[in-house]
Image 1 (cartoon, rainbow, N blue to C red):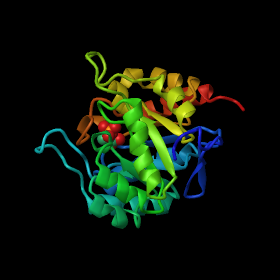
Image 2: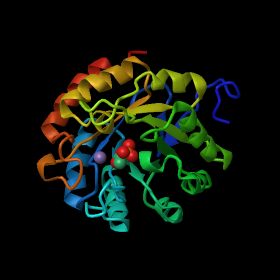
Image 3: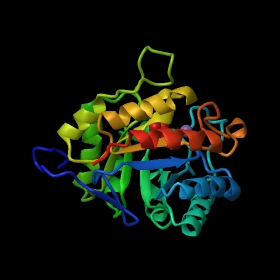
Length: 263
Ligand code: PEP
Ligand code: MN
């Protein structure tokens, strides 16, 4: 169902009336994790000031260590909904448990399935069974073929509103947190009809590489870019080393819009 051979035209994913994959670039910025209403609202204000339509933020955080901040859970989704309504923004947030999918639909606009859950087949089926767009991230060690098959699980349940997101894969290279597989973008665009995003934060894990990685993503044909922004990254409860502060966000955005392809 995801194959370009079966469907020639690009799939456009509609998120709160905003079209993703229609040839315009979509930007998804926001904190790694939802920490408080004030924190999310501050980032939302900055996003809104740029005329952008979406915000991200994790309420359920899949952390490597069980002793690290696990997210605010339902309370986090409620904060996201409040901010989304106040600023008229669409919300992208990760869900980790199939049992939470239905409830999440009341609070968020895009269900994110994280890298660690790319092959959580029950979660994929649950996300495929609801009428909500899904942003599916590539697994840490998933091949492109496995990634495409994971998307197929969602479409097989009847939900074709799927965005693929390249977020770096694990290699022997340690200079970056993961290795951004940039050519995955045109391959996914050739093999499937789904929109493809590049997450520059989790792929690089380095603030100094966010801009060049985003430029590369747009140059190679990505439909959207995701990056993390926090009002005060130094005190962030997760991913402190790589989130942009609001000033860095302004600078990043001023630069990256110069690289958005003109139609
Ligand atoms: C995230 O986007 O919040 C996240 C945890 O990313 P990933 O699943 O790609 O590691
Ligand atoms: Mn993060």
